[in-house]
Image 1 (tube, rainbow, N blue to C red):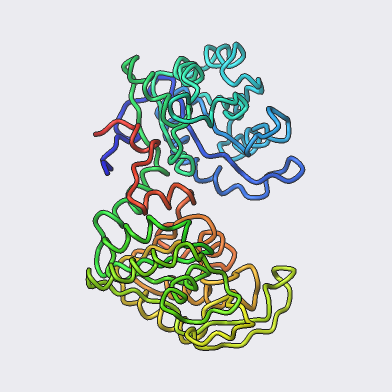
Image 2 (image 1 turned 180 degrees about the vertical axis):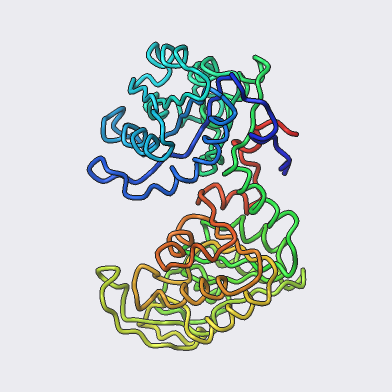
Length: 410
């Protein structure tokens, strides 16, 4: 994986029109932003370009836009939030066409240090299509507005979308620079280096519901890490593959042979593969998810046939925490149980606490683990929390991310 990419520090943006692909896909309720983390994460790159005297043109998607362009998924609230945070006016081009006459006029009127925000890129409809047809016309129109391009949207970097990867082709054609922003650089530094060049011992912790979601991650990480810890719902498929009773616990029956293969691979490579030794079981899944629930702790090899495993037990918490505390690099993706429930969050809390207390480089791979760290109050104790769930998973699989790959090499 080529990770030595040009960043915003590697070109002179003074007086140039710079298109920045951000990740402003923020949660909205009644038109109000309920979590502005992604907007705050984009500020260092935007401020750097303003300070350099660039004409800064921002673009992003928001939501899935299944019903076509609509005001509920407009970037208008983002423009307002950006104005407050940047302390300067942001010219929001509300045109649903994104790159039409209104956008061209707004960009033509820009002075050095000005900021323009384009409308939701998905309003064009071509944004999400497969790479072969990823809105070539749209990508070219975006490039026509700018001289250089900066990708700072790691959450979308695993998609070969018009505004993420295809636009770079047209920027290159006009002799411009394609760089990554500070947020992308941080993701590359932490996630990329953790997998490609970790300080050892390197411990990887995988949780979450399904083995199927993390097939390639397990395979790739077994070759890279020293210890692989598997918790969460996916652990039950591994336990069943060993011939143990797992009751009504979540299981991926089609992946039993795969789990056997992975356990065999770990043995062959001399890697430690840790599975839960005890489990929190209940009669059924909590309903509502955060409602009160009675649990008991049993050995993972002896789960009663009428019970369901919903979290790791205290002995496993200690086992996993010890492994994490002895590491120099830890990557964690996926909770250890139903962390949305206070009774069943204990396993996830124990792992988060162990990571918070270690001197190791701790990297949280986006998605539910990031949500768990934020909710449980451990976020500021981690070295890095990834901003992209799907993108960080593909990075951990060893895949080349289109949004990273498309940037110019140094």
